[in-house]
Length: 519
Ligand code: KIV
Ligand code: ZN
Image (cartoon, rainbow, N blue to C red; front, side, top):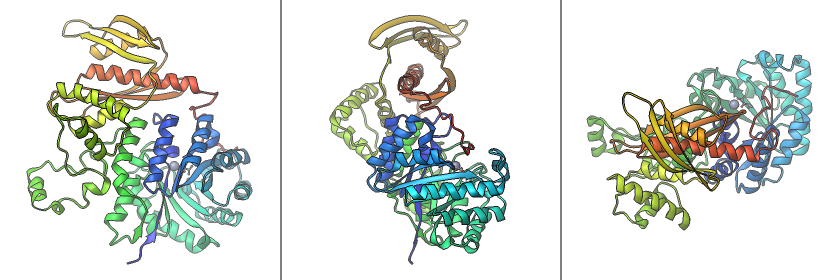
């Protein structure tokens, strides 16, 4: 059976990064872009260049480093945005400008434009973008709540003005599969010129239907799916790349479409995005959740041992999960650790391996078996983030009948500082000690603890999200001691905030520009 090709447009670095708290550092954005390029993503939406200096710099550098992906930037429907976007993407081997405007009644009311005024604006801005770049995508934001006649009218205008891709966003996750398919079908059938462009689908997951809606749109004729790794994105997120790609692969019998994604790279990029965005993947998440391939019940295990297909519709190896996950122990050497890391998708330079090996030995002394998740937690901790603040020593005394006391020594920009602080429990006292040693205004938005594996000697992974003057940073750390992991995660988040403060030209990393502004 011949299969139609579906383009994968990844917007983890734009729509995903827009999710409050998911902000990534510059280096992290470049790393994720490189992984997306390597896994065969057709189009990477690398950012919103006018939003901040940081976004502009990230999009420009990603444009230069991408080997095969088309690099796209987002722009509102005005010349300034479009010019800035072109500046950022123009050095890519294959650049694209993506310009949009909200076309539904609610969105039209924000810039207070009449239907005719907006139609004229669409004509002018798409024409302007097309004069700069051969590859122009246009989106009527909130398309699924736009009146049919108006939607058909503005899609035709955008096509006539030179758009090469028409994206139909379900901005608020409102549509349902049959409606999603029908909308694309009808646009292709009724809008003059529709055969000359590619239709794309961009779904949000507010009702949990983003994957189903995207696949239905493909059945209706869309040939580009917009998605993010782990479904990252505002509110309930976007369509998850791993879900649509694996659905098309596994059910090629009823959905005769193919992508060029190397699915064996899915697990690695999923873990990296979870780490750098600070948004952990839920355990039962389809495809990439910790439990997606776990078979705990007796009946399942019995069936799996007889024939893996009894309960598995895809193999773990298809998404890059190693089939065997034998734990390491304190006698495992550097070569075994290197092999395990390679299995998990990490090929590290010798100095990085040495660093992780020292911490692996330390962990193996405290913990009988070191599982894959433990090794991954060690890798996450070695993420290169400048250490302005580092934990040197911590002793906590706690118990019933009084406040906890934390005696802490920090290295602050190379200088040792010590204090004893009290608090309501061990973590509170330790965080109070950090605040006393390093005064700051950052507000704790999230504190989350997960056990990496089972057992009372399990490592705890802690995520801390801090907010300061609109800047948000998430820190993570793991340790067999939950309080130590908590302090290290807190310091990690503070270090990220300090770096953002230092790097911020006015406006950098604070997305002051609202997506609903047309001007
Ligand atoms: O959800 C949406 O409508 C968007 C547009 C900017 C394409 O992300
Ligand atoms: Zn969106």
